[in-house]
Length: 314
Image 1 (cartoon, rainbow, N blue to C red):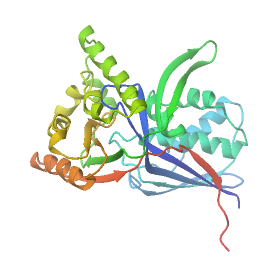
Image 2 (image 1 turned 180 degrees about the horizontal axis):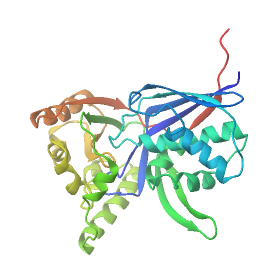
Image 3 (image 1 turned 90 degrees about the vertical axis):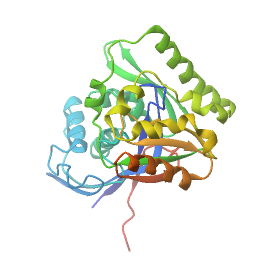
């Protein structure tokens, strides 16, 4: 039996002011082992959200793989998918984007085709619009992603990948409550002032510049935002209290800044030391507001998607 393993990193997006602009791949993984067989599909689930995800052909990974086959006129044969996820659902960590990239990878394995990045992103955008999550899950690292229209070809992404500075690690504080992306899109204003737009553009540019020049002292300023975070944190108990740590970095040695991960509910801190103390402070602030949470210290994944054959035991 031919077995192939796909490993896709989770991602955090928005990064404060960089709303819908860039994302960062995290060392939390969705792993899918593809066991090829003559006909019929089966999905076996374990890990995060395993009790809530469908095991039939409505599973997002399988749905993407089969849909791309239909679009390309290349019907794929059967397979058993062994899916294990470390990525929490509906917490702003790109679980659906990782599943979409995994589904595209399943199609490639079963069809024998290799899609270009432009083709991969074009198909991925049919399932969701979050290029700032899709791009880092495929490419790894810090990725700036812009949606573009290709004449006669539909939408795809223009991307620039950047290596993340190794000394900056990530602390995730993941509340028990969920914040769905669609719901959180609904709380955003339809129009913004020119002043607020310029405020965010300046800080989105600042984030890229400070990474280039290693001006980590400017991190907290680059994470300030007027487009989405002020409208989202009121919908999650304690999130505003954690976000205020961005104004108090001097009180927490090693802390560079704090932001909402994606649409929430996860809060993400960027730090160079004292990770456990920063994690404890984030969790305590949520607890004071009556919200339970867990914390994870993670590195950035600079590899992105990895696909490889599984070596038979023995």
